[in-house]
Length: 311
Image (cartoon, rainbow, N blue to C red; front, side, top):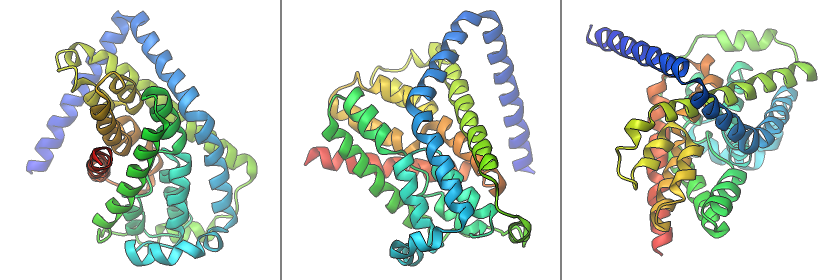
């Protein structure tokens, strides 16, 4: 009963906020057109060039059923430590190469193919949703913070935090959707190349739309965010949209900037969480659970970065 009341009030509050946002956009179209263009620009420059090719390639590999052979060297290690399928090792490696939200898409694809259970997919989401070196070392380290070595430290902290985070959630158990994915997998034939490209393009465009929307939300909240101390504002911006938070964190003292960027990269921000959730929708994974998994990874990553830069 209490949960129903909370859910009803949350829906009412969310509806009210969305109506307010629609009114703001309608009354200040030029301001929010610029916000949308900035979001689309960030997507086109920082996300699309790396994400789309990897989405197509990984979908082809999964469709060919070649994952087990590729994953043999590391597969047994991941099976033992995380209680997941051997294919999780490959998904993890691809996630840290390609960045958000490729790992989540691969996890969802494996589940839809019936190659992993719902419980295994939930476990994998704790360590297979990661950013990639192009963004961490290239964009954040080299361009924003002006130091590729710092970028390497952030990347190492990010990878290690994902592996540690997976251990925290290794015993998670969820109710299986009985035989649903296995039945659909047995009936489904291999997809054509055109179908794979089409689904990957649609998934990538969904990511772009979410980034665009969250850039608009940040600008709508700017009057409130401006009241925060200068050292805290980038953290809250990044918790809404990762790229925006990292850009503004670059203006902070170097050590603080590194720690905040480390947290934001591993947490991903609600924009990235929504991107990943869009990929994982068939798992019916609660948003709060995925958010908690990403938040704990962010804390671990920030702590590791603090230790490394202190040394």
